[in-house]
Amino acid sequence: MIYLDNAATTPLTPSVIDAMTEIMANDFGNPSSIHGIGRHANQRLRSYRQTIASALKTDPRRIIFTSGATESNNTAIKGYALANQAKGKHIITTSIEHHSVLHTMEYLEKRFGFEITYLKPENNHISAKQVADALRDDTILVSTMFANNETGDLLPVKEIGELLQDHQAAFHVDAVQAMGKIDVYPEEIKADFLSASAHKFHGPKGVGILYSTPQHFDNLLHGGEQEEKRRASTENMIGIAGMAQALSDAVANKDANYKHVQDLRQTFLDAISGLDYYINGSQNKMPHVLNIGFPNKNNGILLTQLDLAGIAVSTGSACTAGTVDPSHVLASLYGEDSPRLTESIRVSFSELNTIEEVQELAKKLKEIVGK
Image 1: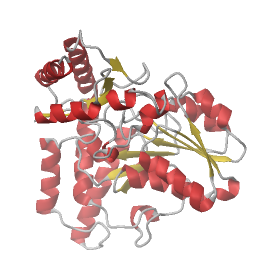
Image 2 (image 1 turned 120 degrees about the vertical axis):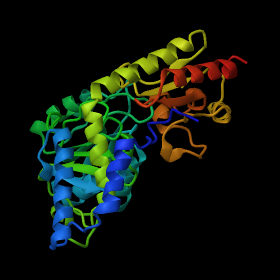
Image 3 (image 1 turned 135 degrees about the vertical axis):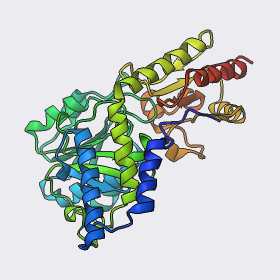
């Protein structure tokens, strides 16, 4: 099977498997226990936190371990909004966010009366000016993604962060698709919160991080006093070990990996020269995600034909896989009646893919689309 759906999830690398296996075999301690075995586990936990913090160029005390980006996004948005609603009940986000952000916003609207402004792309992208125009005195939070999971488009997070320096609103960044692929330094973009998930950069599923400045937010989980009393639950040591190893590897090889993915993308596009296609999104994007459409070709049928040929791609977000719902991202970009919603597929690369694999995808597409 040729796997080209890395925006949905990524395979574990041997070094990550080794790191997790070592913990499973030799270190079962609870880092909250005060005996020697517990202290040893706590020492490991501190080292993993330092590894993550170093990759983000921040203080380890700002790293909260979570079960993944969905929890991180919910904690940042819901927790901050509920704790700070006396300052205002207006929040700004975009219409192209991941559903873990959009559905959290809907929850705040319906249950607590928050007013949410959903910025729609203009000329295929979100601008800092749109955020500036939407800001109000009662705006308490702005939440945007770093890179879109369906198109790879980069959002102007640094410009938005600078814009908010003279405003009360906190800034949350969903960095799931960017982490481990490009530079993600929350303090440089002036983020108050930043979310990431390990399985998007060759780590395990079920573990992630929330970067947080000393902001007051309501905890979503109540129980123990783990994570400096910010997130109750015994830490997932096996997952955290794998995440730390994966991010360390990604940072160490970031430039070479990025160049390889660029080469994969260009090789693929060169190989399908002659086919009638279009690329969705803006010009400012990461090379890792390619949202491509073929006029008058149904993406569901195309996806099935590629799957039968042993090639895994997708029609959009993994969270909508198996449904017939059109992409909300493409609908925001091109309108709900655009044929692009039923013609487009998402091809997403990683450094583990080879030139031969993308050439095989191109060959199969020529056979299928060319009929």
